[in-house]
Image 1: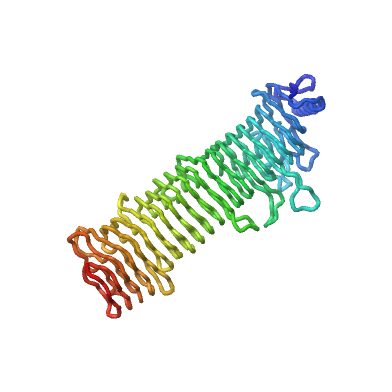
Image 2: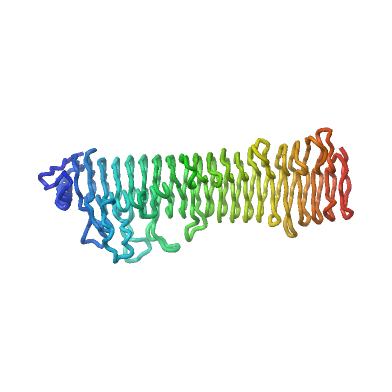
Length: 587
């Protein structure tokens, strides 16, 4: 490869930070002539080069501006070479512009925007432009096969790097030319006023091993993300699309609102990064967020967030797996549809946060996650449908391990709940709770119920294992038209007065449960109903393991029309005169 080193004096280029117009013209002429002469690399020596980054004759002043790099060219900046944008009042600029070209590399050196010297009073009559958020360090505009490597970029009025398309999709009078095969690696991107990187119209974009810091600080311009993946569209029509974007092994620190947001991209992978702020799949489709490390010390923000389903789609098809989250307010907040959350480790969240949650979501599965030392809610499904919590280790809540509210068809299966104030709380929802271990015995304070539900809920509670409950193991209120099934649960060494208590409703079923007491005084009821009609209490086993006797193993005397059948019990039944009782066996 042939390299040409810029001859500053030959091309009237100043290296002392003066004469922006002459310096910019000289560098562009040197690059063009080097390309014409067959050189594939141009080196910029050390020095400070003031760049006129505004195209004053273009409709958009950031297009075709600044240093323009042709096809098949590498621009190599000496480590002490610095391109400095001349202070201006333009709503847009580009220090380096990579237009419809191919095989371009930008490597090394520094680029400095003029954010803190910028005149924001210009173009006030153009309402869409008055935010002045289109000032770029490097503008990749419809180019192909671009590498940006080891460049230090900071303090642009818009973004350090913009990856965008020329033309628009779904518009008959223009041709859409997205940026393609763009690699941004080992760069330092700091303090852009808007985003450090924006990908709006790009395909096959790789962002790897960069340090991305402080986007949007000091009165920035929204969205203020480390990386924003956001195409433009209206309703279900896309005019530009970010596709196949891979964000890997980067460090994100101090970015004002989020580290990464896949607002509307397709096939986006966010993996192996370190982040001190949120990563969001937004309205994105086919997103993977995996093996990232999230760390904060102030218990603020949600580590992984979302917005919903993109217009015209039925789901997000998102996978969130293998992430480690520590010290945030909340862990993972799922919205939208078709999301899998598995194998994440979450710890040390705030007392008012939630580790794993859904809101207005559909078809979401949380599996094999580990949650420790989180005093807030550990799992929460709110206003959602078809949600599954399965195989999660859920520990140390001062509120509840699983909260289900205003939701339909929620399953909690094979979860391990320890050291929490309450186990599962169901409110105005339909829920199936199966094969859960709920051990509240080591909680430091007074415990609530292992499982509870309200009169607006339909519940199926099966095969739970609840050892040594100090408060009711299963408590619920029901109403006519609601379904309650409490079957085959194992409640051992109960310390409480009533392990299973159901109030109200018609035809609840309480069957096949094993209940043992190990109290320090006589008294208690194994199963009690109150104000129910037609309860089926069948084939339960209830007895005390020590010398202290129960009041009654089963009490239905405050209900009507109960059927008490085939139970194995120690002690006498307390029944209502309307009850049916047979085949109960004393033990």
